Image (tube, rainbow, N blue to C red; front, side, top):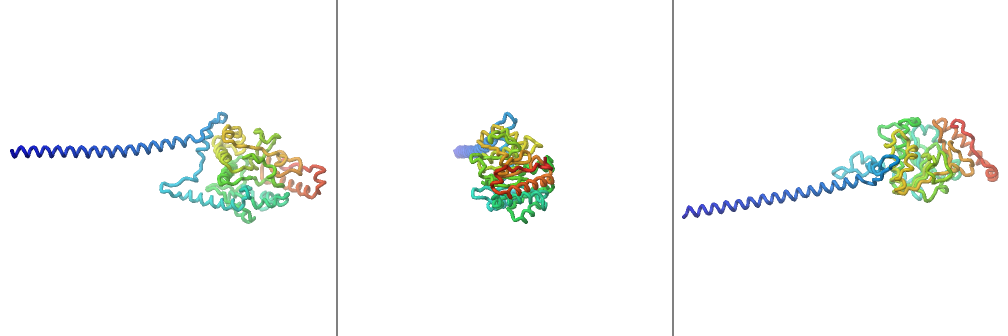
Length: 378
């Protein structure tokens, strides 16, 4: 009897242990299932986000064979990159510091409506008694243009140009590029020339993103009158021309990126990203050539960008000089290659302006005053 009871008790205990073991296995399986489900949901969420971002503004250009959305999405902007610990990498800290410096310069130079006049220069263009001095002199001898000098920001492409800018007590920003020497005269369409032109476009985009309107002017442009009354109030992006076809909305006009007025808004910022990235689709082309290629792109219409071309009668150049000094605002040494040639003929243009300003009002209006034919750039 006692043996029977012991056997029965042992069997019961063994059965109880089996039940506990089964319950432990079930708990472990349930815990594993919950963890696995959590990882699955996290992976699915991450994949969905990547899929959404990769299709940002996916509008295809049939005429140029590349995707506008991809050009915008792949834009090389690292302003919002942070490390896993939530701190900016040292490279990004440096960029943020530079952006803060730029913000201070822009704040000091800006007009009441946050418009700044920007030019970009290297050491070769800032040599003493060089083209930079001619550029600044035009503001002084122009008609009510001297006050505009306090709104000019010089983007110096190298340290020498930056130092020379500071000596002239202007608003100066060091737009230097690590590992790239932009100090020498960049021959037309050389590798350095192309780097400089695209650096200018990228810099303009940065300023627009910071909320400032831009009048960009090359330093081989003489300023004789304030241009604001001749800008179109409804346009986002306005640009001078090598040759003007008598209608400001005609996309067949031949633009010149040496003089641009652009308002800061989402349309222009997206346009500048598109323009800059289009250089990858057209290697070996400068900004002006690429602009001529993309100005017909459906993407421009899709974002609602309003483009206007400026009349050469007001914003002329050596390609197509303005015909009457009574109306001219600017004079550009375009269609001319070489600093020395530009300096010679711009000096002639300054002399023409001086003679014009020496006339009384009746003399100026009785006979339209024109430019001397360029001798070195003709």
